[in-house]
Amino acid sequence: MEAQTSETPQPDASSPRAHQAAGCVSTGAQIAGALHKLISLNQTGARTQQSSQATGTNSQSQNNQTQIEDSPEKDKTKNLIWTAGMERSALEMYVKAVESGKRGEAGFKPKVHQSVAIELAKEFPGVEFTVGKVKSKFNQTFKKVWDAFLACKGASGFGWNKAECMVTASEDVWNSFLVSHPNAKRFKNTPFPEYSDYQVIFEGNTASGVLHAHPGMRLSLHVQRPYLLVTT
Image (cartoon, rainbow, N blue to C red; front, side, top):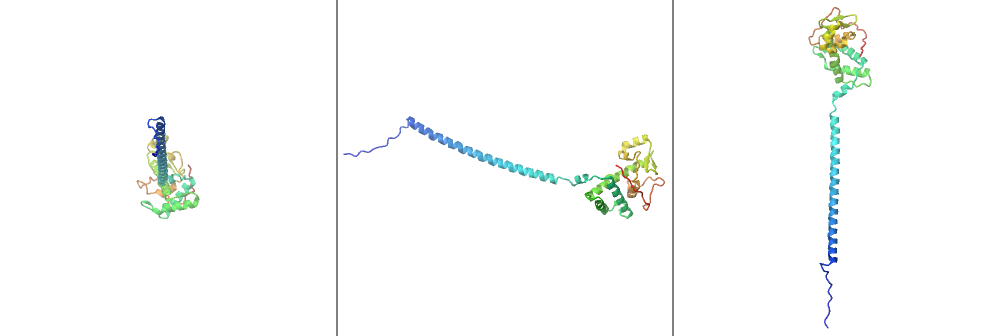
């Protein structure tokens, strides 16, 4: 007898079942590809977001550092509000410096402003006086006040009332003069009681070097000056 062999029947590629199996395989591959692409996109997005956050943090840090570095020292000077008492004390200290021979032809010696700042800090605890602030007050306030006084005192049509320490002039003269010298407005019909201290501090240190003298106007450095009242 001849041995019989059995063969496993091969599916017909054209049968519906074969088409269905092939379709499942294709669909599975598409799904796997889509998932892989989605995962890649998510990872890329996460890296981009982290990079943006890091960039933003660094940028903010740089901005904060720039703001700190851009804070100028002169802003601190503006924060100091001088009271009438502070101004009066500073003037008296500069007068003492003149009487002690600490002012030369070119003005005060460098350490004078420092000394005034130290003494003011002792007299007014809690107030931050610095050499820069004191020197700025001297140049931007005291010096300009004296220059304005000399300008109107020496102008045509002005007089000097010694008893009241006041510059005098008619209304028309004042109005005309103030057009070109607005800083002199503080002297219009207003006494200048601190005049004697200003004279001691700035005498001979003006642009012209000459004070337009009036009889009795010049004071000796040894004359006792009355207590000054400074109004704002």
